[in-house]
Length: 353
View: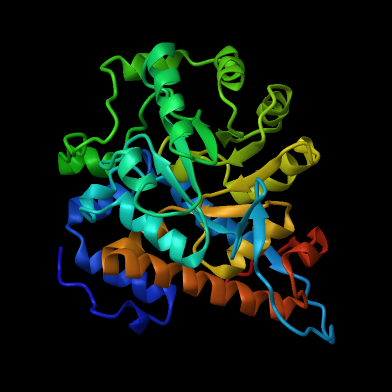
């Protein structure tokens, strides 16, 4: 890792952070976090699909202020952007999830701690007073899972999210060609050796069991179609998380921004809906909110912030997202999140210059 900027405030655009992160990280580490499955078509389309929609600005709205604060599962957040669960952050920064959690606390949003963290849940939860959500890779038997759930309940985590789009680890060709083994990093959570078999065999009955054994709000991460969104509601989940794992699992999966509106419609207000995948600008966030997402999660963008300045870099990344979102909201004529509706966006003609 190269020397970071001493003051993350020096970054004035998200693009600057992206390019500095690429310069700072070793090639194999950059490829691990930036790459996707197989031909990386899903990875590219997640971002490219943002251009498939354009805004319908309203003018002369008499706005007094732009307020981007909102809530998620009843938890107040200062902006509709949370830090997605990201595995192996230790490769970027020894503080990893702890730095992410501290940055989220400072900006007054939420960090999602992954099962594949080098920090223990105790070290993150007890180090600061902030809202945390735990993301579960279900890689052991029911006893292992129950013990882990009890552990995070006792630590005061605000919700539990089970990731369901990893029945088999995606073929990430950058890692394969780099001969990169990221699985030797320190682990804060003991993961049994039968993890791959367990994830492959997960079924809706396991979601029903999980719903019975925890008092926490339950989130399913990795929903990509209406049928599964409907089943999630039938199983009593509190939040449907639309995600294709950042294009890292299945090649040629649908871009999440393209399927978001139909999943929101299927959920019908019976649960909150959030989304990730390709969100790199404040305008991307505004489009997701217009389609009905309660908030979005950033993964790669947060990792780039970590790479350029640790905790300070993540804070600056979130600040810049907020600045871009406020600017976009002002220019489409809305002053608060509640005023954002589907009428603000429409399908775009694709122009080729």
